[in-house]
Image 1 (cartoon, rainbow, N blue to C red):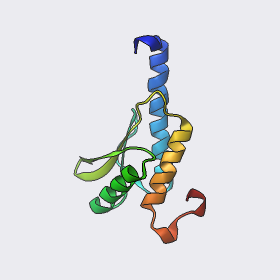
Image 2 (image 1 turned 45 degrees about the vertical axis):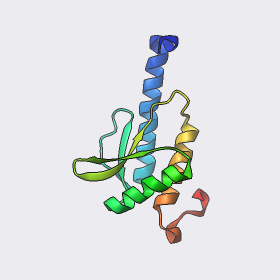
Image 3 (image 1 turned 30 degrees about the vertical axis):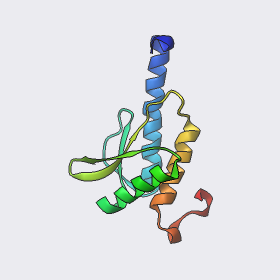
Length: 115
């Protein structure tokens, strides 16, 4: 943090918050439910039932594209996406969202462009 100085730290926080909003926008557009108001760097998303959400979490972790954990928020099982790395790019976000959508979408409904 000291090496980033104040302006670098501000830019990092603003970028990670913007990237969290990008995750939320893409997941909503794909038909998944974003549970929280994304104002910082955290996104909570449900992929349907608690069992389905836990399946998607396990498969995204096994896939290795990104790592997202699970949580229960206001009684809803959710995937928690936390954008907090200085190295995360917008391309990383797009790649991760594509993997999430691919994993969460039943095979017969998948967009071939996301495979």
